Image 1 (cartoon, one colour):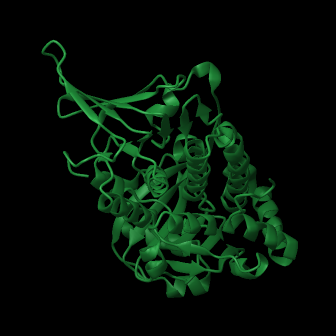
Image 2: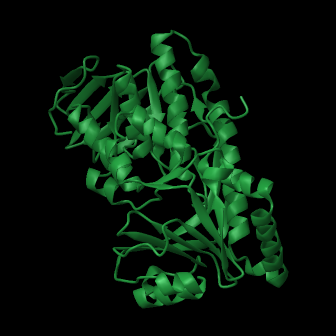
Length: 420
């Protein structure tokens, strides 16, 4: 949003000069959201639809936020939330519906029919960058305030009834007074780091490999995703559209992107695929190439007084199974409902149960992502017997309807009220 654009009805600005020092401004709103990634933007949009004011503060530029390449498999719960937020039109027009995916092991592919096994459920392939763009455009069109390039963002007094967020921009110190702070600022953000050390517990597993990812303007090798278990390491054939592909290779954490030419990447990918996929693989120059480490991470709790963590600020999952964005979206759904209930129904029940409800769902997704990662990747320390164990479990999964249904149900995403 351009500087100087009017704020919503509940926000006001007081400018003052203290002893001739740095100018200061104070702004009042109902919810201060730290982080303008998809979780922060989605929360802002859902609150706006309910008539609740929010200001979003982001330390990066908008262009930088859009430049981050992330996953693109959306569960039905996430699709429904984007529709609820009023930003689903382009997603439905350009997104690709997938009713299944392939498991490749021992040189052969086997399809998991998610649609059949889950009573008609599917997933949609639509890039996280595009989700972010749609949410940004909707926020700008509604004239809602987002502060980009905010320096030295800090959260204060969230254990009181009057929390604050401060930041610096253009040589000026700004304060946002609010009722609630939503920490949507990612794994390295300030919100989780500001929680009292004696009130927070972190759980983490770091995997001994990373994913080397390549984005290319080439047609996908297959109309659905292929998850490959190979003695040479894991591979994933994914896509963003019918003309743009995303491929991944398991590589050691010691590898550097500079070590991998496009030619070397395509050659290694071919070595991990089945003969049919190798024949249909169309290669081309990469338009983005990066190596992402894999970790499982959860923080408990996700509420600290009037500050709430959501998305990557509270949890990280390995990308195997594409749960990251979907988990963030369900956090936002629980949080938006809780805040809306606070203002409309004058109850704090949703706020009080936010952390517990989120964590129950998060740990289910963490377990699935850990299990799927352990099943599909090469762990050299496990030796040849480890590969045999994986082959046996994969063989069971594809030949057992209950085994296939378990992986299908988890992949398409459990309902929001599962187990309640």
